[in-house]
Amino acid sequence: MAPIHRRQFGRFVEQAGSIFITLFGLLILTFVIGRIMPNDPVRAIVGEDATREVYENVYRQLGFDRPVWEQFLLYLRDVVQFDFGTAIRTGQPVLTDILHVLPATIELATFAILVGAGLGIPLGVAAAIKKDRWQDQLIRVFSLMGHSMPIFWTGMIGLLIFYAGLGWVGGSGRMSQFYIGLVPERTNFLLIDSALAGAWEVFWSALNHIVLPASLLGYSSAAYITRMTRSFMLDQINQEYVTTARVKGLSANQTVWRHAFGNIRVQLVTIVALAYGSLLEGAVLIETVFAWPGFGQYLTSNLLIGDMNAVMTCVLIVGVIFIALNLISDLLYRIFDPRTR
Image (tube, rainbow, N blue to C red; front, side, top):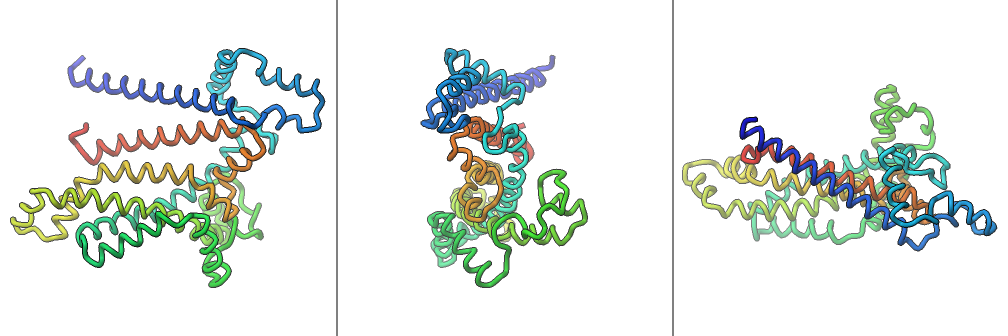
């Protein structure tokens, strides 16, 4: 085996080992969460009025009478088989429920990160170029407001102004009540399903409903991306190569966007990926305000009733999402920065 191939194989083995260790640690974490939560999963299943005999039968069926290490091995076996138990509220497998609600959150978070990155990156660059001028001060105030205002408050104010007052956007839910059930669920992504079915009225209703919650989520994400972009750009602008490029006659736009911005793309990949992961796991409040039937609302409702099968699976999926985003970031590193290949 050639030396370069050995190095590539070694990096692959190292990365695979890191992923395995991370996933195993995540499984331990979710198992521990299921055991230390104050809610009684057996009582959540049998109800408060169940007899002692019924309670003990379910207790044994769930394996809680066995040693902890044996319970963990049984949990690992079920996870490997993609068996995450049955949801108390719906009576369906937990994985089926999550595959039904997760696309709604992915749709919302994807629109939000497009807004966040589309606003945050140009504003961060502009703030760095106009450092300490009125433009920089204005952008920093914009970022501070987006970072400071609670998302549930901005959600309610947004509904009050843009829906109830001006009527520019749709209200709660993913679409108008009139269109519910008219489009067959192929992918559970409403915009895609309605477009595939040619139901353009449903498509525009769904788009009208997603604009406000996605924009508000995107604004809070843009605040973070703007501050980080400004910091990265200031570090590059102060480098000697920028001064050299200007002395050689390059315009300000060429110097900033071709050279300085090109050197922060790798860092921005990480920032945007982390922001996207945070949107996927942190859309609980905005989904509650807008009655958005997504992953966050599913997690919250099952946490309140003590359905630990659903809660543990949701925590596990959030961890897997972040691992996947890190892998995608590593791939994009190699595309944007040849030195990492």
